[in-house]
Amino acid sequence: MAKDLTRRELMRRSIAAGGLFAAGSLMPVSSALADQDGGQATTRPSARGQGPGFGAIGGPQGHVQGDSRNAATVAHGVVTQPRREVPVLHKTSVLVVGGGPAGTAAAFSAKRMGVDVTLVERYGYLGGLATGGLVLGIFPLYARDRKQVIFGIGEEFMKKLDVLKYGIIDRNKAPVYPTIDAEAFKYVLADWLLDSGITSYLDTWGVDAIVDAKGAVQGAVFESKSGRQAILADIVIDCSGDGDIYAAAGAAYEKVKSNIGLVSRIGNINEVDMAPGRGSEDPEAARQQPLVGKPSEGGRPSKGRVTDFNGHAGNSTPAPHVNWLNMRGPVGDAIDNADLTDLELKLRRGTWTNVEKVRGKPGNEEVYLTETAPQLGVRLSRLLDGCKKLTNEEIHSGAKFKEVIGYSGAYANAPEFQIPYGCLVPAKVENVLAAGRCISAEFEVADITRLIPVCWVTGQAAGLAAAMCIQHQCKPRNVNVAKLQELLHQQGAYLG
Image 1 (tube, rainbow, N blue to C red):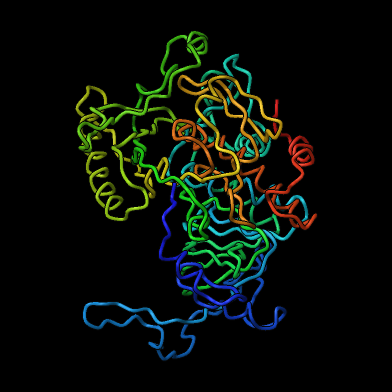
Image 2: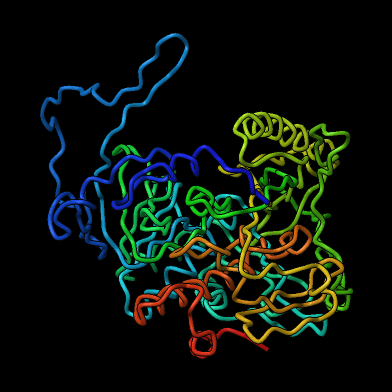
């Protein structure tokens, strides 16, 4: 756990009481100390066809003189960033940071409760690793008896894909897991968001937390082409995957390293060789295979060196004659940019080498690389120190929790298991919830809770809990979990 007194914590403790500050730099948030109804806060319409750019006139927009007053300076080898005010872009009740599986589930679930929701995503699309990461397999959905245990908003997502040509395959065929099409899912999420009434900002990276003098989270600071801006919020849901916001706010966490891969798709392919049950001449025999055992992930590293797939053809996708190759990749530090850069380059080289090997097989001479994922396949980086940490012993013993908010399906050697609400709540920091791969769990458990349908589960629970905080004016740790469970049932979730 991160127990040492960090520079951020030392600086925070030195400030006078009162006011809101960007946690990393203690910059005052401009409009927070001014008139709460005026200033620079803006609300951007979200309805289809009403956003910026519709009806705008192109061409010169006026000359602007650059302003270097806030530019960093260097003297004697030391770079200094001057203190500055951060304009408030928006004010909201619930702020969801990250638009991946957990973030989209959280935002849509909270909005259904009638509260004001804002969703911010660092990339130009929604879906996270399920779309931009090309992790197209939706597992684990099923218990050992092959009954589906993950429903709720994730099931709604898949039903929307059901009606799209080439949107999803292998639905309701346990133990074979469904496989989605990334572009179809991007469309589904964009279409849903445009009609949802949620305020959204894409291409916007959450870089810091906003806290008050007591350390309670009051929003987050973001970077985009518009510069550095703040969004004030009553409750923040950290769905960044890496726990960026709760870490910046001072919440304790465990730093971990895990495999980082790069998924790709190849075209003009007529074989599959990496998925249990795929390519079998007897589909029924494929369905009778044991549920345990991970879908093959290929590319296993050797002595820290990036390797290729040895000519593997991968898994089938909804698109005819197109496969996806799920690269495991070597162990790396997902919050170290030097590590990420090195892996990004080497994994792309390994991907191309694999395609050349696939072409070397008779009948595969015209195979081509359709695409590589625009984002790395990061598995784990930070794990929250929560009110409850889910342990490996608990999931293997079949532990039951009074505060259950959802299930994971069976995966590898682990049976299906319950997830308690406390895994989403920081042990100390107020006004923030976590969902997705950065929740509170032991490393072995987090290697399962990071998976896409389980992120839907924790995201939906976090979204409803945040909405309850707004409606009942309570802190996340004081949410009435029995009432939360009722709401989850109403939204179709499975709690056992």
